[in-house]
Image 1: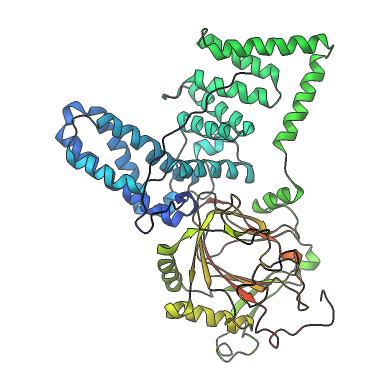
Image 2: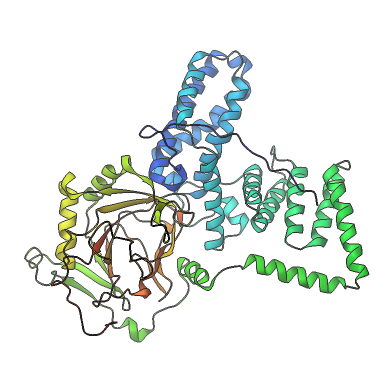
Length: 536
C-alpha cells in the first residue's frame, strides 16, 4: 500500500539568553511571552528593510504589515494573547516555518540591517519540537474538552481575549503532524476541516490534492474502505495522473474483489469498519474518561447530604498567635480526602515577586522514573517549574512560615517552594504526590521520609480549563487567584491515601501559574501523631 510522504521542516537551531540547551518553549506561557517581543523586533527590522527596497519587495511589505498588526496586539497583553491555544500554535508555526521561508525569499540583494537582525534573533526561535508540541496541545484540548474541529478552527473558545482562527493551511499542518504520529483519527478530522474551508472559498496555498492524499490514506487506515475510495476518486478528478492515487485505487479494488469473493456483504463490512473505527476513537482507560469528564466540570457530584457537611469558616491555625486576632478565611472543598481552600492567602504583590524570581529559572518539569528513580521529561506533564529557597527572599520565607502556621506542620523538612507555569494545553495527568511501597527509594536522598501533605497556591485565574481534579473520588478544584488548597497524602499511620491521586487539567484558555510546597514526614512526629488504626 503506497502512502503519502511525510513532510519535514528543517529545524532552526537556537540559543536561549539564559541557557544553551533547548528549553521547550511550548511548555511554558511565561517563557513564550519573550517570543512575542522577539517577533515584534523582527517586524520593526523588516519594515526598515522594506523602506530601503520597497519597489521590488512589495510582497514582503504586505507580510510585514499583517505581522505588525498582530504583534502590536500581542505585546500589549502577551500572556493573555498566548492564553489562546490557537495563537500559541500559530506563533510556533510562524517563527519555526514562515519566517524561514521569508528569509530565503529576501536573501538576494538585501540590506545588512535586516539580515543581521534576523541572524541574531533566530538563535532564540522555537524549533520543530516546539511547533509539534503546540500542535499536539491543540489536539489534546480538542479531545479533553470535546471540541469539534470547526469550533477550534474558528477560535470560538470560552473566555478568549484575543480571538484567532486557523487557516486551511494551519489545519493541514495539524493534520500532517497527527499523520507523522500515526494518529489517523486526528489526521482525518483536520484534513477534512482544511478541505471544508477550501470548499467554502478560502484563498490558501494549501493544495486540495495533497489534502485528499493524506485524508484518503488516514481514512483507509481506520478501516473505512468505501470512504477512502470516494476520496481517492475525488483526488483523481483533480489530478488524473496522480501516481500514488492511481496505485491506491488499484489496491482498493483488489481488496473489494477479495471481500466479494469471500461472500462478505457490504453491510457487514461497513458495520465492522464502523465498529473498528469507534474502538479507535474511544480507546481510553476508565480513569482517562473520568479525568476528562472532571476537567469539563462533569462526572461525579457530591450528594446534598455530604454537601451539608462542608463549611466555610475563619481559621486561626489552631490558636496560632499570628492568626488569633486576624484569622484567615477557609472553606471545605471535599470531605474524603479532606481538601480545604484558604482564601486571600497570598497577595498580588507576593505573587508577582515569586513569578519574577522563578521566571529566569523555569525549566521543563520532570517526573521521577519509578524504576530507575532518574528525573526525566514526560508527554503527560507539560509545564515548566523552578525552585525557590526561603533564604533568598523575605517573601518566600514569609510564605513558608505562613504554610507552617496554618498547617501546623514543620516546614524545615519540606521541599523548596516549587513554582510552575503551564504552557499550551499545559497539564499533568493523574499521579500521586507520595511514594508508593514499590518506590522505597523515591525520596531517599532527601532523608526526610515520604510526602505527608501538599499545599498548592493558585497564582492566576484561568479563563477556561486548568482545574485540579481527583479522579478516584470525583472532585474538581478550580483555580482562583490568591487562594491555596491543602490536603494530606498520607494517613496518620503513614500509609498512603490512594484517593489523593490527582491531575492538573489542560489549560484551554488563559495562563496558569501555581506554586506548591510538599511537606515531609520527618519532624511531624508530635505535630501529627500516629493513630492505632492503619486507615484512620
